Image (tube, rainbow, N blue to C red; front, side, top):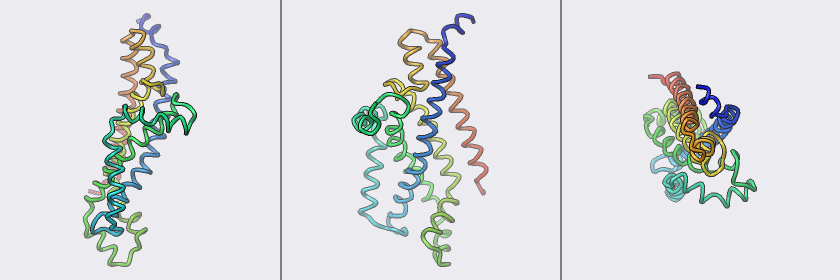
Length: 221
């Protein structure tokens, strides 16, 4: 037990956990905003909806499909020039944010679109027949009606982002992934890697618990 306590650098573990929480929090918030916007545009510009426009829909769908399909580890490498231009470095927690957001937002956008498609069209048509504006339909009908699915979707996305931060850590982004790789794998200390893995699992369980709680609270069924 004493050897175990000595092997794990607890201060570094705590700092790595803070970095993972920071990267996850910022990227989840930004992903929610961008993904919701992209998902709404995908839904609203589709055939038969309020802003039906095939050209715009195809462009947005193409963007979403391309970035949703690129494996995250490859996306990080592809975005190195952009990250360096934007932040001046590819190291540290902030440097991981562009890849995290660009990788997750299109994924969440599709989940938003699916959630919106599940809304009963009769509810939308009833709002339109009563003279509701487009803004009213979006903020008073579409988003509230799909809220449980939106929360469930961002929960899944947040859990994926925790995994993405671990991958980003391998190339110097910091966080628990970097800690596990540098202090555990490279120094042949499996116990350190195990502790970092347990810390990641705890974060995932907390995110899942919070997501499930708010999903149930907003579900009217």
